[in-house]
Length: 315
Image 1 (cartoon, helix red, strand yellow):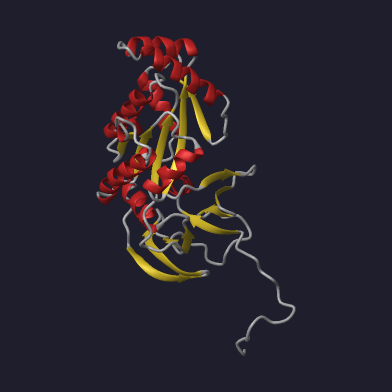
Image 2 (spheres, rainbow, N blue to C red):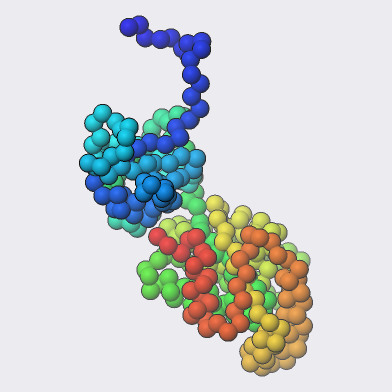
């Protein structure tokens, strides 16, 4: 039969792959691997069938020896060779796989995908299927940085919570850095270009941390979640991916905390600033900002709740 040249008129127009089927030895083990390592979503159908969803596709799972009909001619565990595309740089995928103790069989290596040049790594799933994870981002692109921004009015416990988050990450052996923006601009008399100094200081500090492979940052500041603040923070920390958590408390609780903390001449002025900050934040309810009321919470519990919201707290 002659090889067709180009698409034949009247031929089907195929848009994309909707799903594929893996025949596996242990469905539960396969689901655990793909959910925990590859971040897929488990799916359960009414008839007991299982699947894994990601992007606009899914992988249906058949138990070896108990396949659903119709099935492939020779359904065999470990016979698949699949390429999955990640939205992040390949360095992030390597770091995550290393954290999950997944052995890399090959890569990073240059490959050509359906959309052009890409960088790939290869490893095996529990059945021995060859899994290729590829990124279309240039391999020299800076790795993404998971930035946890803890904001809130003065006296709400931002620094205490940030330090406790750090302690809990240390206990879990998770690499990270902590920067309180108050320490970036303690300068008097206040110069006209204080904002430029603040940005330059963060740029310099983060450059040192980044050169040592740090990809997680806890950043503390009263208004640090405001878009104009995130703009300069993003310049200082390239490839930052933000998780925004604002700590709040009642006015009565804030007054009590400030009274116990501020014992000098600045107590009244600090309370006035806190009251103004609280009013600003009550008027700002952007959906991307997670609100955590610290009233009645210990620092340890507040930190645990913050960690649960932070996408960079695992791995």
